[in-house]
Length: 293
Image 1 (tube, rainbow, N blue to C red):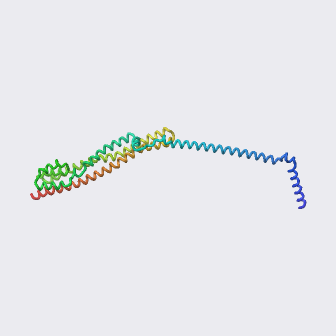
Image 2 (image 1 turned 90 degrees about the vertical axis):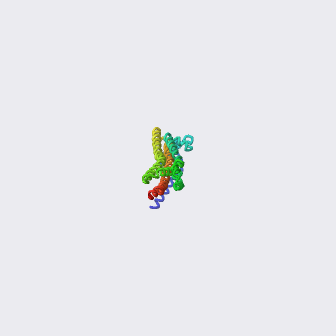
């Protein structure tokens, strides 16, 4: 049985070899071979279609990238089109009317600053050595000079000494009360002259906030008219202009508030020193006199 199978296999191999070498086999391909060729052609056609689709997608991607590039280029406008400020002078112009009001208010407050630096000094409240000189004149009996001391020496202590001398025969309680009123009035005058600095320090941030709100309203209206988000540089520029008044208000308010408290503290210190000097003079001149009587 095995021998018959081997003979049949050899015969089949011989027939297949003869068919491959015969001219008819070369001229007339078998049906399975033609079908394989058509499948190969169809596969090539599908590959070509896929290649074209990929190329189309690449072109679309390039086009989208180009559009994004142009969009980015439009968003990040060239340096010649974006408005950059070179300094605070230009920024203050962008602040508009609110910035002008803030500057005018600061100039108004600056006048009180210079006045306080000039008038709020010890020589105008309680001059050093004046009490000692007044004691010497009192002990020497030169009451006429003491009465004119308020005119020759423009200070609060000098005016109080003149009043005490003019009313040296009056009861000490009445003289002391009136001297206290003089001191209180003089100190209140110093406080009132420093008060405008506190007003400026309070109003400046509020004006800055008002300017920022008005600027933001105008900016968002412009963006709304431009459609969608519009140009991002336009939005950023508008916000920058709106924040100018806020920064200006804080820059002015901080030194004004600091100086207001400095002058207030200085006035309080001079007031304490003045009250001490007046109390000592009253006790030495009038209290001893009433004790002797």
